[in-house]
Image (cartoon, rainbow, N blue to C red):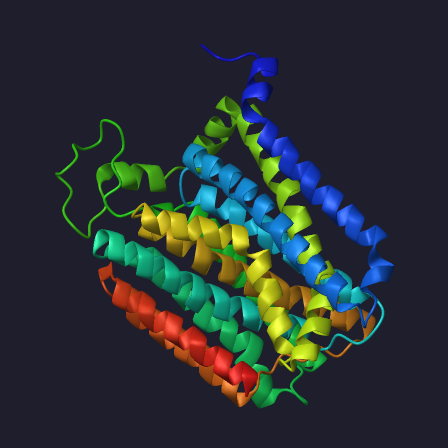
Length: 399
């Protein structure tokens, strides 16, 4: 029996959801009001209390985002459910980076620094932790190698266009207008093509290995490393099938999507508001300024990170790669064209070329990722190697 709209809303929006939203937006309002107190140099007590309070609020809100994301993933299935969370966070991040570029001051390297930090965190820290804990609990995880290969192919291409090519053919690390236009077109074109294929004809490539659909196959009859008929059916859902699902559960999907966005917005806004506090605190500690970007990126993608680790603990290896690799593909595929277009329209210089040390870290990360996910079964050892590479990146950061 279908629920009435009133009952459905009450069942979908709990007190904890409302409390998180009020806490998040109330904290953001409080930070805006107390902004004069955070003016550099802020008193040490204010600096510490402010950072601790903001991080605590972000953690509380992050668990709310994870709750809605997991509910949507269950309702829509992968890759659609993971894509909702990924695009929600990435789009907000792209909008904020674009807003910073359109604001006062010089921000030539903001896109490069932000995306580099996101790449190292997602590809090494988050994936490393997920594979480590998932590998220890399940003695290895099976993933859909075709889907993962598609993600990695996209990342090799996008990272090359974003950070490698401008170092070779650019002027002082920046593309010329003659270069920017084709790079924007190529990046957006291949990203759009990828999304269409991921949500359509190749959707089965992004579903869990051995997924069992009701009535499709009996548990225990799945051949390791193969997709069940149920998984193929789930992954091959057409746009018509998805629209039918949305119509049947339109209230639940709409409410959960709204809750996700409204809960994730304060996380992103607070993480950027705390940038000044981090810069001030790190300067007092003598830490490199780039570390602030890493910490902010870690906080912005905290909901996705938590979701990925929970998926690994549940043995859902493909969901880990959908969340992590999918997030980075979307981040590079949307951020770079956005900042290049803004640069062309406003006459700002956009520096994308990375330093030799960071290019080495990116290259090693991509090579390690290809090696890791070429295996039928990823293990805790694979996770440990990614974590060590992230530690090496921190050494480069503090060099």
